[in-house]
Amino acid sequence: MILNSISVDCVIFGFDKSGLSVLLNQIDKDALRKSLPEQISSDQIKQLYEKHPVLTSDIYWSLFGGHVPEQQDLDEFAKTLLFQATGLNDVYLQQIHTFGSLERVPYTRVITVGYYALINPDYYDLKQSTLAKSLQWFNLNELPPLCFDHDQIIQQALLKLRREVMYHPVGFHLLPDKFTLTEIQSLYEVILNKKMDTRNFRKKLAKMELLIDSGEKQQNVAHRAAKLYQFDIQVYERLKKEGLNFRIE
Amino acid sequence: MILNSISVDCVIFGFDKSGLSVLLNQIDKDALRKSLPEQISSDQIKQLYEKHPVLTSDIYWSLFGGHVPEQQDLDEFAKTLLFQATGLNDVYLQQIHTFGSLERVPYTRVITVGYYALINPDYYDLKQSTLAKSLQWFNLNELPPLCFDHDQIIQQALLKLRREVMYHPVGFHLLPDKFTLTEIQSLYEVILNKKMDTRNFRKKLAKMELLIDSGEKQQNVAHRAAKLYQFDIQVYERLKKEGLNFRIE
DNA sequence: GCAAAAGTGTTCGTTTTACACCCATGT
DNA sequence: ACATGGGTGTAAAACGAACACTTTTGC
Image (tube, rainbow over all chains, first blue to last red; front, side, top):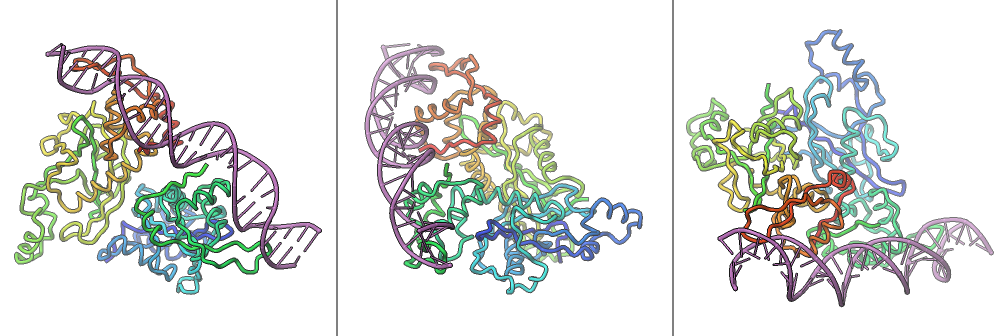
């Protein structure tokens, strides 16, 4: 049995040189329409269609989500959704907020629990997902029209991520296993929406002793190749507990 | 109509010289029992009773909460609950987290959205509440036995408050309209669970320019009377947006 | 006059900020 | 040889931590 009035929606973040992206799902308007009650008049339907273009158009996208099964733990269900969307287990996944305004979904009352996930780009090859055809990455600054309050959920996710990233070493979940210092810096710049000074940024990183020189360098770049670093897992775990301060400038 | 699988629970914080307190509600075990399904055998009932002492004992307390009405906004409902419990409107109220593990409530599936509220002690005279007889303040360090996962919800609320208080001027909602510097310091010490240095604390406060000398002093104290301060609302609103840094020592 | 809490400054080490040039690589 | 991004140090200012005594008041 499904709890129809409670859903989970996942804001799935990815990062690459083009910035932060979100994985979205193309809405099937016919499926959506099925959630309307059956015993309403065609007049009422017409009104609903006019008020909610999402019911009549195919240009809308949504977060990946679903209704919570009665017999599944809430966090577990979010993990299940994430696996369906990406084929990945063991992803960094956090609850954002629960959205419960009356009119957030047309005609029915649905309270949704938002989660956000951070995806390591080494693994986000969507071919692994059976749903791949309806899923697509969108740059945070070029989002398509979104259904319901999903734009708000994404904005809240970003705020939450921003707060988290300043005091805990979590942004790193968005990086590949080996990365350059410039990549980390640009990650922080995108998340915090702030330019930073390279020398100061690196000094701060160095003092944390969180990074290990992997000994490797970038390949095939048209400029001096940057060193590739990895995390020191012990230090990472310690900083996760103790916190860090990444409020820069 | 009520959404039976979604509830809201409020962690209502108060502060006075004895420290931080939480307003709790004495559980009526007979009412609780009514939420059990009717068609179960007496054997099953016996098992449930053994497994969940909350169903047979009157020593348990709970957060103040309720099931969400289908036609009420989630945040509005939390406000309604708060009004029922305290007689107060316009209270600082924030969502904590949504708790959705399978077995958190015996026999039924209930996902609960936790909120926390900060109460100005000038107004928390419980006589205003019709429910006053079953409500009581408990010091955070001397909590009675709590039902379900309500102890966890309180701990999460405290963590959330702690994080919030370090970077935004919210703890101040727990203070009366006029207060001494020592009161603020002791508020921060209780919330952050850390002794602070008076001189450094006051220097920090002074730099924020958040406080205005009210011109008044404490009355009838058996020692030098302390000055009473108030907030500068403009600065307060600015700091709410910009944030502040109260990580001391 | 004494008990109890209020109130107040300085020093030192650390952290933050601002800032500009040379280096390595591919084309 | 040039374009591109990689990589590095220093000085000044702000901040944080540690620390002890005098003042006011009521009893």
